[in-house]
Image (cartoon, rainbow, N blue to C red; front, side, top):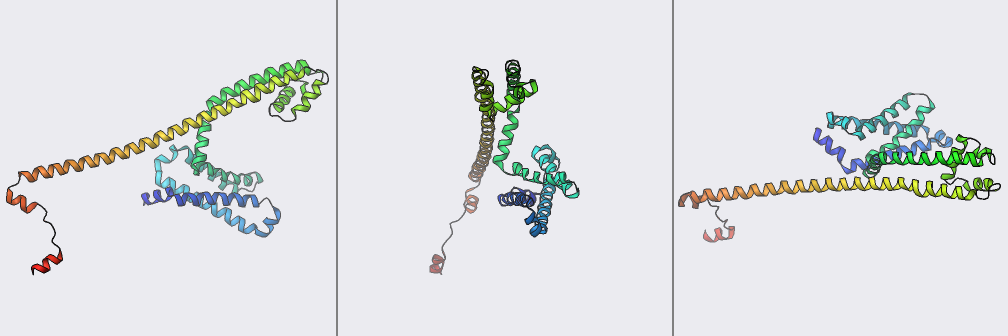
Length: 286
């Protein structure tokens, strides 16, 4: 029974059914944000929502039954358990915050779709390198904020009046949000301020932020390389297992042939398989 359940959970049609159910549940939760649709189809949307939740819970129970002690060792199983648990809490609670958490069920796509799972694994692998880049970016922002506060604090107090305001303004500049108007406001009193803004944007946007992309791409390459190595190892194991079976068959044939040679001639002739005679030949003999 356990092996049949395992095969059902791993079957591609069942996986596609779960993916389709997650997408359908996400669509119904989005439709609940339209009051006219809720008035007309509110009962149907609620039924679909609860049915999807019960199917997710049944799938989770089946995984626990199949994997048993190995279930908590898989981080994705823990992730699914948390998502389904939050979904049950949101259905029993009356708070709007808990009901809003039902949309977290859509995140189950991260554990069901293999490509999304690889992306998340790569991001988690890139976290150590990204933390170093965050520290570097924080240092650049802090140095630039102190400089901007001292240079342009009196010119544009709403933008660079104190350190927290300067940090927010420079973060806005780094993201490219209305940085042109900020620079023009300062350049009206300091014509050379374009040098400061140009260097800051080049360092933050075109250097530091691109380092994030480099770290993530490197982590994804490592993840893909590990998956290819695992696939090659699995193929090699299968090939080695097949070769062992062939070697054992060859050894058995050699042993049977050796035993036949040691038999007396009469017994050897009787032990050898006789060719089958056709029915037509038997009929002619009769």
